[in-house]
Amino acid sequence: MKNTFGQSVSVTLFGESHGKAIGAVIDGLAPGIEVSEDFIESQLTKRRPAGKTGTARREADKFQILSGVFEGKTTGTPLCIIIPNEDTKSRDYLKTRFLARPGHADYTANCKYHGFEDYRGGGHFSGRITAALVAAGAIAISALRPKGIYIGTHVMRCAGVSDRKFENINSDLEKLNSLDFAVLDDTAKDKMIKEIEKAAADGDSVGGILETAVCGVPAGVGEPWFDTMESVLSHILFSIPAIKGVEFGAGFAAADMRGSEDNDDFIAENGKVITKTNHSGGINGGITNGMPIIIKCAVKPTPSIYKKQNTVDFSKGENAELLIEGRHDPAIIHRARVVVDSAVALTLCDMLSLRFGTDYLSGGSI
Ligand SMILES: Cc1cc2nc3c(=O)[nH]c(=O)nc-3n(C[C@H](O)[C@H](O)[C@H](O)COP(=O)(O)O)c2cc1C
Image (cartoon, rainbow, N blue to C red; front, top):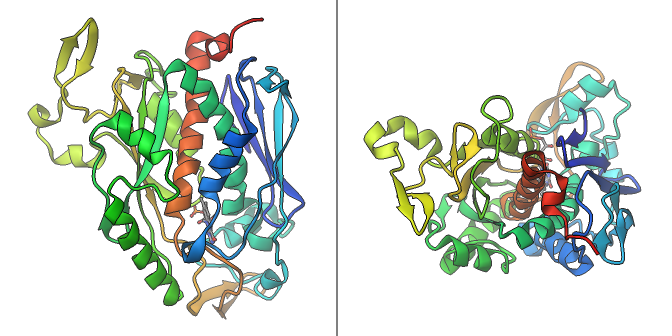
């Protein structure tokens, strides 16, 4: 499928950066799930740029739910949310129409859509589309919370500055969900912001690593082969623009460990099976083991920078120089954390519905 993800609970994204609106359609979600417009708004606020660390494009994200919600609850039928685009400056993109931005999707979009693509502001490839994913994800998060499933992401590293690791995951998640710039060590925020602003002053950009924890997912969810929990989660995470690496648990570091270090000892505790360590990131054989799911995502530096770059004018097949004029984020990472939470929530709704049936997430009957 092209712009649709999920088997039992699916999400379809539509729209372009400078078109009339962007949006999402969620289908297959259980009826009776509480839909709070205030919560959707608060999630969108976490993604919205602020200060010098974000693009100067300021969208109010005045979303509208067109269908699938009645009297504040999901009906179980397709739920469509649209978010109008209001702060567009399309002229900035006209001059560089055929100059491929290095690191961006202008050239590949042209190869696929033969020049019919809406190139303004990156069109359908723009980070702007992730606002629709966040709006849909807010509803997925609302479906998971009553089941005791909580998700949170922190900026683990940005421009060489590190945050502290997760310690008490439950209280760490609570803290993260109340923050606009999600770090666990309060002193890391200012250091990261300083580095982002330094890069911005140089006309440059920076990237980093996001770390996500998910608590409360029951053991036994996921398939042993192609729809392993890792493969389905990484499928959606790699769809988020600028995410270039995904790891679970110890991830690539496990390659340097001995089996005796990497293996997570099982322990029986109060009638539950847990593990002493969590190098497997809560997943064994593609199936959740009941421990927190731990994911790391590498986020690259924003491709649109304000330095002179070499490129190709793909309408002429000639070498060219590029100086970008549009408005761009000097870093994506702090805005992307809520996009990751949303993508993970939508995936879990899908995987839990596949495993236990659609009504598993239902708000019950009246
Ligand atoms: C929240 C968010 C905001 C983004 N903002 C920008 C931006 O302002 N300028 C830009 O060039 N890329 C931005 N991107 C990244 C591009 O959309 C992305 O790098 C591009 O589509 C190419 O995809 P790829 O990096 O996955 O190959 C943003 C991504 C996200 C998730």
